[in-house]
Image (cartoon, rainbow, N blue to C red; front, side, top):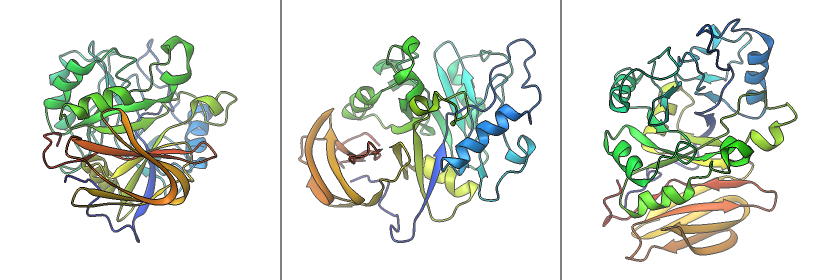
Length: 325
């Protein structure tokens, strides 16, 4: 079995709440500048992220597409436990991509080169050699289907995965509910293609504004042994995180694989679902359950939701007979 959680010490692990696709500075197509970078709007946006529990800030601002890093260069009074991460959202004719852990910057609205050249530039500027990578943003919104996704993901193992949940794309009418890519995730995994799943708001306003209740959802819970920039980058690279909508008061307390049996524990009662090939194999309302993966399934991933609307999503656990990892 290939389980990204197999070396986690669950009794002592830190849950570091992170976003890798979220905006505090809006686009400025006229001057290619962010203007007054400590103006009240962006600082308020940063503060509302922090107030909602985010502690790892891989902000994806554009245009220019440059890292909002280090945080103290862009925001005043940054709390001591707020961890920065170089990142930006880069645009090509093929799609939009986040550069988690990379210091690479572009200034035009569209990168002047192929997506492969962009990936090379991003990966060549990684802050830590064992952390971070490329994430394919909102593939359904960008009309990136199975074949293109497969090509992008095959380029380099540091192309980490797809944004499975882009909440802005889910709820804004202009995007026609194309922010949910769970079906594409399952299609890729069923074909033996490695991809982690990322969950983000892609919000462009402060989280306390009137529209935030419907838009500011999505985060990645990094499972780290220490709350540092390098440990966070490794967690993203190795898939040691799970996605959450919303808070998340609901948490995985244990994901453990023995042979082909996967054992799940949550911190409170929830509907725990084992999913493969887009099919829910079993649902149990409990705080603990186990499932033995049948030979016909190349992977299993776990979703859980409670009666308050909190939802969490594991990364895939791949059987040894699959080529997905």
